[in-house]
Length: 349
Image (cartoon, rainbow, N blue to C red; front, side, top):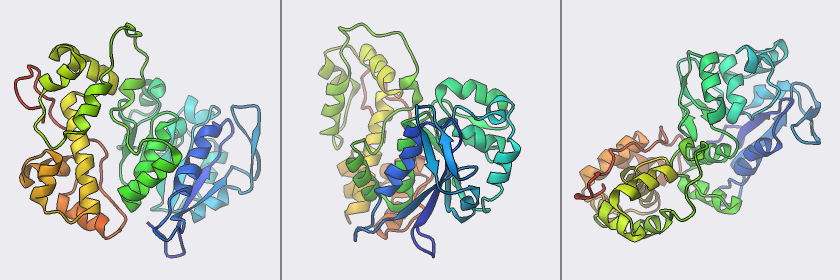
């Protein structure tokens, strides 16, 4: 997604009390996105409410060269978290200084928040009637303060087209990678993820990070079963087979899997099959029937059903978009699917 004047311009708004880690996420992720010739796909700049030092939650300040006028040049504006949001956090309204800064943003600019940066977008009215998320520990407060926002506390990020929000801290990485994938396809996003040494896509949502009682040490994880599945996505898979890899009952395996991943085994497998289908659609010219067989969906009709449900577009449309290298990309990032069978009698998919 490039503007006519050059690479897509991302402007990060640094507010007092910001978290340095989150401030650095857009620079790291977007800054590593390159085209096949090695040219940067994004320009990333930082501004504050005024030029000069900006307090952080650490023992150092960040010197920002630009004032809020820079927001008028942005194609995408990113608002990271801050511990000093003032009336935006306490009363659900913008301070006069912050409102004046946001007034520089041009209509049609893509807006992105990381963690509690969503309070700024919500207080400005950008999230009214939209689905959004924030850190799970703030979700209840966020919903009370902004009842017109459809808060989803269980996801790592939300994508409502021109407005995107993320959950806490590292979920900002997930969201920025999603934006790169949406703009330029999986191959670019995967390369950025490899260079950043993070997974290109994390399974489940915030549920896996909410504090729960510590499990007994002797309880095994479901890692072995997941690795076993990833080598056999093209085959019919049954819950009994997965549970056998961990030497536990189907009931115990299903419970542990959901506790660890936030989704059912069936949902997770469908998600992995969709991800493999995306890679094949982007990188090969295989017929749809073969893509369906390679990903375990069996038929082109089943492939079409699951890709449409997950990405909001048909496999053909997805291939046309990303094989041509065009921007825009698919819509929702979630991977809805029915739960797998609970009795282990039938296939998981």
